[in-house]
Length: 148
Length: 185
Image 1 (cartoon, each protein chain N blue to C red):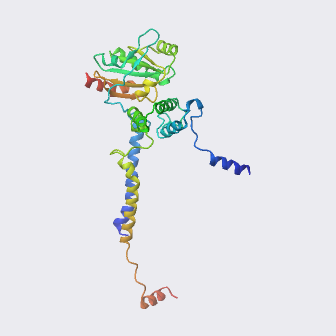
Image 2 (cartoon, one colour; image 1 turned 30 degrees about the vertical axis):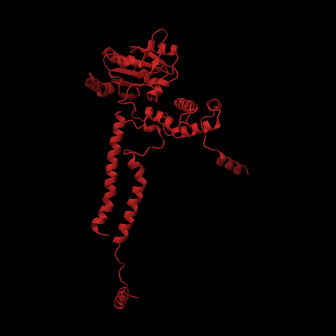
């Protein structure tokens, strides 16, 4: 029972957000939701595999504050994103943009499937015909050779 | 399967593993010699104008603004540091050597208390023409800073030419900064 309850709690627990301090949050829930959405798309430059919204790093806290200031000032998601990218480059976006530089990255799954499918098709086509079944004379000869 | 095919199946993975091995070895080698930092991030500011700012100084000293960086008549090095930052202690001697060679170095104290910065400069030497105080760390974010120390080279037109994240070493100065300064002057 306890185990089941623990499991249920584990499932129900959402992603831990570092904005545990209510003073950090915007009083307007729609604005706060927008700020969190933006923060989740930004990389914490200190602990590079965490988002700004998840990280406990000092710099991430500064970013969260800036995002909320800009949301309050009425800037669009795109404007806030551009502001961050102008300072920290595309690396700050957890979802890399589609560009000439990231073409290979985005095309990699398609390429892998294509190469795999090509290899399978080629292998199929090359497979030789199965040999014809033994004739009566051959079967007798096999029988004689194996001594049965 | 023909003989050529069989050889290909055997040799192709071997070849790929060989190429990958050589690549990984050179990467590790470059990491060891400090030429490659897997966590390093290229600066978005290279070739762009220096962010506009005005910072107060230490105590009575005037501090400086982005306009002061352009007004030196030669490229200046801008160094973000803090008294609580250990690599900053390690690079102090390198910065002092740069000052002695006549290179103007400006300092920005990042999220530091005035007294702590004062004590740091007394203990480890002051290589800076001026020190500006960025207590909130907001000018640092305009530079795309993600840790201290970081150093930026700004030319006479106010364009950011070079950024180094981490403590400067004599090797970095000799191999990167000095050749770049030579092309700029």
